[in-house]
Image (tube, rainbow over all chains, first blue to last red; front, side):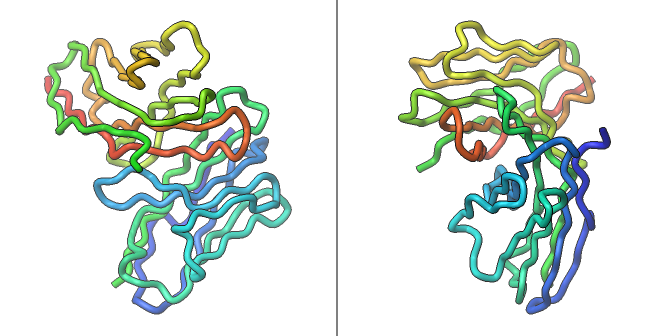
Length: 115
Length: 116
């Protein structure tokens, strides 16, 4: 069990560019979550997958954001036409649906800086 | 409305002493779960302890214990025998409902610095 992995760990981009992040969950976990964390705040929920189905999206997830989880394994989060306000840490987490506690295991995050 | 409130300023604690981190929550759902996570400077969120709303006893995990006061809607984390490696941000989080998407709502966190 190698835990949740995320790539890249850091991304610097210019305003208006598109960026894509990848998350590889713990292999037996069927639920996958994306959160965003800005400086001095706790993580905020963005979206959630059970297997390959995207079941919920936060209103924080504007039309410029899209997430996929093909085949119910890894997931990608794409931000189009980045803005400076998108600068944040993007965290991915996974869990197993039949776990009574529902604890989520987080990856190391991708830190995005938009210049 | 804020579902999780963590209002303590940054805390300094002497090594080997205990520290209590406050967390209050707001929900009308009778079924919920409360979590504490640790976030060191490396950025990864590390799960520490869980308390279910129907659990009769306070949760304990090694040096971590949760002081759960349901009527007051508080779920304070107690770290006993602090170690230098405990220096980190600590986040309280809540999951509402027994099923559903299990999304977590986080507080703003408590900064802890352990001094030798």
